Picture 1: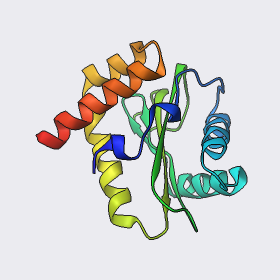
Picture 2: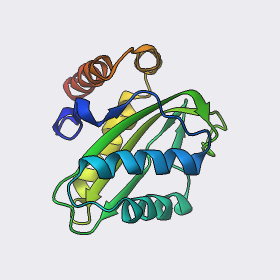
Picture 3: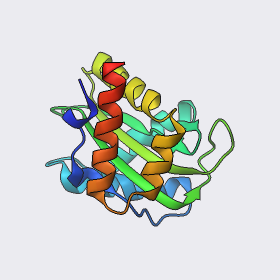
Picture 4: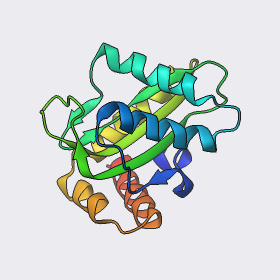
Length: 156
């Protein structure tokens, strides 16, 4: 499965406004809930916050991958958000986070969920990819960068 199977250009926010972790998660959950029919923002936010209690999803290099499993969700969805100013997200390297991938998955999708997490993590280990995402001017550019990077990783 490639990232473009679960991420669409419509699921990209290139200018997150919140300045702290809780605000970023709330802002992204609000955006996600507005795009997934029948998904309650509060339930999504709680699932993501519950996951954060287990340990930060700030994986370093300015990247976080908050995620949660939602009972009754039909399929995995991925959403991208970017904070130009950066946010303290308790990342493992202590650096501010600028790039966020929020994954929501059905409770039954453990294997696919892990593959998506691994794919995003692998893609964002590349400094050039992270830099291009930070410089992208619109959601179309972000989507194109992600699709290109994901295809390179799948082919590798």
